[in-house]
Length: 356
Image 1: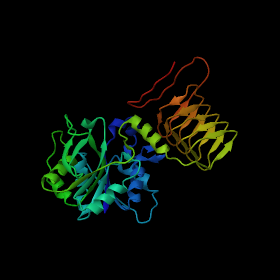
Image 2: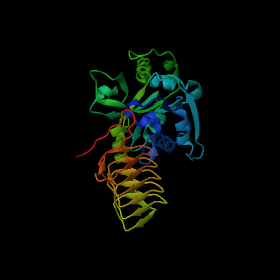
Image 3: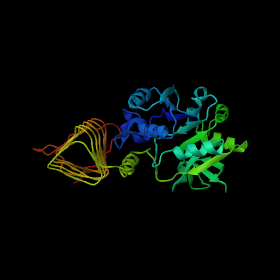
Image 4: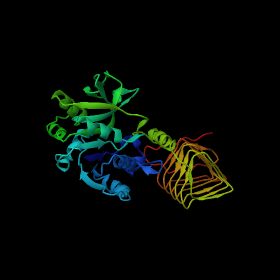
């Protein structure tokens, strides 16, 4: 069985973070989003993985997966020159799939318990497809499914104005290869995209069996900036304490991970918190649900409930930083003197809130 991860999109809802890096390589809990997806696939026993990439995403995604070490894993990169919907992305891998069963994992979705249960259900049921479903409060924003008493999907509608249920498609699908024949003949939707939900609806109409399996535990779509912060929180809930760095005159409380080569001096770290390798904390407070990427430094500043990427410098900040997304190699430096001013370099679509 093979696996496909569509990763060719621009990630416009996550700008400005995605102006310079594609969404799949943004980090939560000090790991790229696509690496979380790959790890879930490997745990499910899926080793042959195709990544659908664009000219914009290929280099960064390839670099993010170079360090994956797992016996037998094989990555194939397939170019998609136009992003015309999920159905189109999946169809790009038709020749690569051949006659094999395969799954599709939307790489910006996170599952507390991974995806193994869906793969197992698909393999044991003999169904034409098995789809992960989750109950949501806003089904108009998703593909929505209706189940019969046996748990089979009998209706599937993409972003309906009047939802027939609150069961949304959660970003993981298992298919027999026959779905590719439907995708190859699929017409674009009213919004000009090739919808995977339309292909599945045709599969159901032709007599195919499509099982809907509800997600156990939490599920998170990391499509917007605050979703990354909340996903970070959810992942840190499962931390196991592991302190490898040097602790000097500091207090470490709760579930805290501190990577090798890091130095924590005259600081407080309240878990759950994840401190990467070669991080320096000096006179700092790191509050719950914060991850700090490797090679970063935080001195005389307070940070909590935030995602701090790699190579970041934060120093001499009098106001606590909370619910922040700090990108790669960013610098936040406070200054003292006259006149008291803010000097800012902000990219397009940045958000800055200054307390008084």
